[in-house]
Image (spheres, rainbow, N blue to C red):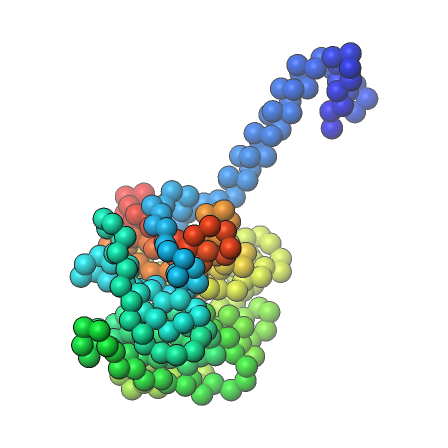
Length: 297
């Protein structure tokens, strides 16, 4: 520590220095700390997770949760946590939003679009499927998971190779502090697996991070169509974990809390561009972050 006295000198560890020397040292220490902080932030190959294009959303999407990309017109479908509305957001040009009612109730956590059918995950594990029967109305059906115990889910994503939807636990009764289970929903039979399809070992994340007692509470996930890897984002401690489709973590990336204030949705375009939605978290507007994929990086 440097202590500056009125006689234009400063002291550190009992030694006397000119004040200009102390000012330079303080600046160097400050820059070093900033660089160390920035050095903790990194990105998966092909992405720069610090430089997104940002789309600000209106107030009625403050609780935006799940998102699904629609390649036909390069738009984004979205749901919010508190009300059963489906929104269509035009990302290009002026911000235009359409909406349709699909259900009553709350706790709608994630969204998947597959072959003109939408699938919405509720926090307890039920899945609502619906499709349009006209331009302004939908028909819906709910499938309870039947899983025993108290369970909380926030993640639903498509594994197109197996033709199944995967639900990843955030806090399930069968899991402990070191494990997170994933269960499958077969799109063809509309049946849930009653045993986990895979289990994420949180200790592997700790090993990669070289840190103990990591609190990993995932809030969104999707498979990157360009690499086949599973991307999982955790809003609680601002991490993105990349692994294989069996849930084995391969790399971990810290993300900036100022940019990712409350990430609750994640999806990819067919080209591999990454989209992440943030709830407002009572800090400004909710938004969508778009990260271009550059295969050459």
